[in-house]
Image (cartoon, rainbow, N blue to C red; front, top):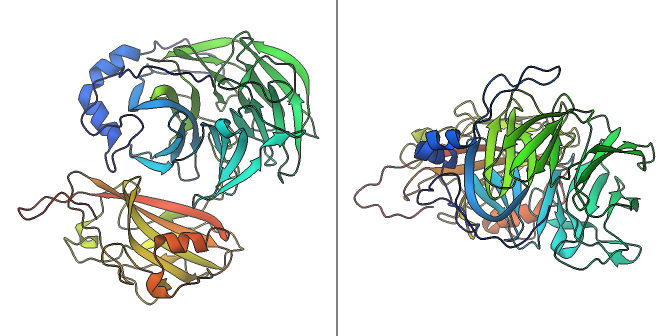
Length: 497
């Protein structure tokens, strides 16, 4: 993607108080609902797309209404979907990564990065990031630990790794242009990192400024946009991961791209997303209020197109599905299928009062499934992000036996309790938020390859201590998000815990 300094403009609709400003997110807002309630009619009138005639493998059955999700950012990019359907996206200028859930809640994930751009999830649930400012490709595990996968070729650091695609074997193709700094490498090229991360090879060396990149589900075709030349090319992927049979796909460049179930290619171009079939025939345009930077399919039905567009993020419901597998930029390849549910509340639903301090302070019944056969134990954490610098935790439970895959309501005697941030005791502390508005609480279950080894007594095992202990033994994790809103009483202050 091309990144420069831009004046922040709120384009789609007036944003209400509490909406993100300059890369800061409110802790608990159902932002999708807020935005739609603010001005749904104006939004749809602004960007309604006329349906096209029916074509084989491509059928818009209704108008496409672009819905603004949230803004404003310095430069939103790189949407990637995890195995639970959450969408992660980067803000390049702010050095941050955010997470958006299907119910419209945006939460902070990580900051302190240097120009994070393209994102994708690998088969282990790690977030792979093109960190352009540091000239490297990194991996961020579910606990936030960063590992450098590659940062140089032939003794020279990369220019600015920009976008990436993970192939079915787990290898990574990535583009390496130079937008903000001088060219460090021999050119602005495309590279391939082997599945074991031990070898890097240059696979394209004749482009002006490569940018967007995506491959087909079968791992046979790679599309690469030469943003500098204003062209997009297709290549055959050989058995040794080299490329051959270069051919012009379309005479337009692209910032980011994705595919749908029919193999149609979605290119982000100035003020629109252009859609082409696999032979390069132009099918349709989706106008956007500002230049889109990247796209991916999300949603339970895989029919929602998630669009990052510099200062804001948008969604549009499509008639087409995303790819059958999740091997495209911004989605997880070979998802583990590890899931977490509750018989008492659905994902994104309201936590019954019984499980809060306004009720019986009961622990929630949970069930998980799909863990690896290598799992030796489980751990559970319940937390709430009041702000990026203020995370509260209510339930820390570890040493759960591998043969336990459910906890009943108000379950006791299973695993070892850690402390909570409410009273610092080794017990469950129910949500008791006293702040205005709905709050989002996250239950996370971790499948572990061993029992955590702790260097402190149980009385000192808090969320951070446990996450550090399981950092290198986490096989997979699954999340359940719930909301709760308290009615402020006369003696209650606007404090969240």
